[in-house]
Length: 219
Image 1 (cartoon, rainbow, N blue to C red):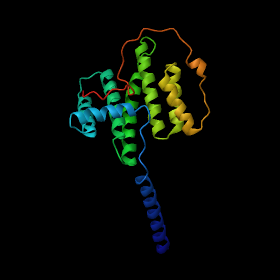
Image 2 (image 1 turned 90 degrees about the horizontal axis):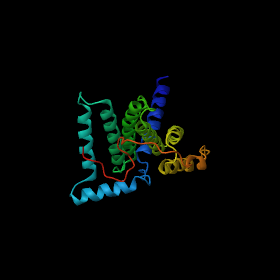
Image 3 (image 1 turned 60 degrees about the horizontal axis):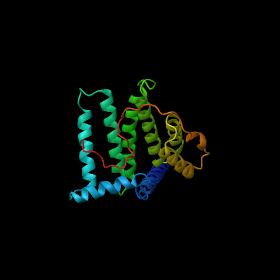
Image 4 (image 1 turned 90 degrees about the vertical axis):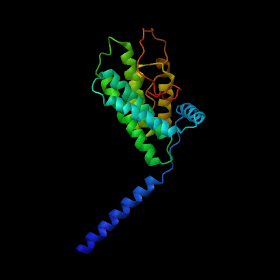
């Protein structure tokens, strides 16, 4: 009996080691196409300053985390900082040469973005169009991170929410099509209807966009 227990333990340890080794030695992910211009700009800017992109991002993240520790910031300020943190974790993921570390930073980005989304979703979306747009940006961002993490069903759900809330956005549609290509899912969007001109509404500025081609702001 003890011999059998010993053998089962050995088998489970060997299986666990094989799983860990497979994950540890998995090839790092290539950055998605819409992240490449930002990463190139970030690397160029830091090289011009004789700096290191990863160190710069870590410093920005530290500042954001300190800001979140303050007790006197508003819910909107906290949500926007969560958004900025998510963006910097996202960029930091593609500074890594390890698949495991990439995945860890993408998951940190996802956690921060969900905090931002939860706050904005709880606000009055009907009285302020900019809030609705902010929710759509967060929903898209969550879907995009799930796509990079290969969690296709969750990615689809958030992409569809964002596209329903903010029709006509070419970036949302292009990334949704990337999802369809990777996953083999059926297309659930009528492209003619999605890009159909709609009456414009007055918009007030909202939080930062993860997909603007700008380096992360050091604040």
